[in-house]
Image (cartoon, rainbow, N blue to C red):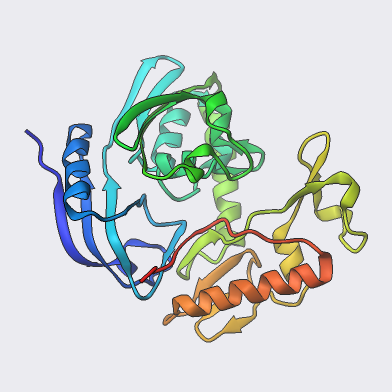
Length: 314
């Protein structure tokens, strides 16, 4: 029988790409799905809340730590059910899954190569890039909700721009998902993926600790677009809505390159907040609020964080 791994008093700064955070009382690794019931029994025994952490590339923890249990699924399988249908465990790196698709002449996610995180995290936040989103080729998701094993099909998941039902449900552990992709040419797909990865490496401040795009690009109704926003940074989202570049909004309130103690808005890309070495959670929150306030005052648009901010509630 497989037994889950339990660690105590873990320094959370070592488990997130922003490199800050206090301690968690427990960190649990689940390597096989059969260990899930052990985990639920442990949660019941300790009477603590829990948080599912993927690769920590979209999460920032409070310096005061997390008064609960951190659980990481490190399940790691990619199974072909037929030449175009794949079942993937939630713990698989997203880039590993995408490369597997490309190597097998399957298209649909080539523009997302290089997005950090796990497949489970990508589903939770409906990750995407360059017009592709994880929802596009997803058939179904298998997950636990309050100890009950469920399967949701694509239409049940309430996918939206960087959103899904899994963000709003409490006590959810995504186990795996099924995808159906389309045939493509491996060489063409790999060439396109490399072009986009190279572009990311040039544009993004990957040499400093960060959590990727800190804010979502705002989605607004077409008829309320402020006149002081350049149409060059606006895209059609659907028949009624527009998507606006959050990076442009931040840059145009003069905050690109702005620094608050050891947290700053990158001077390479205004949508990235970076840790210059000794960042504090309070500085992240203060800088986030400053950005939101300035953007709202100038453009009457509310920016929403794309990252998960884990406050210590004690």
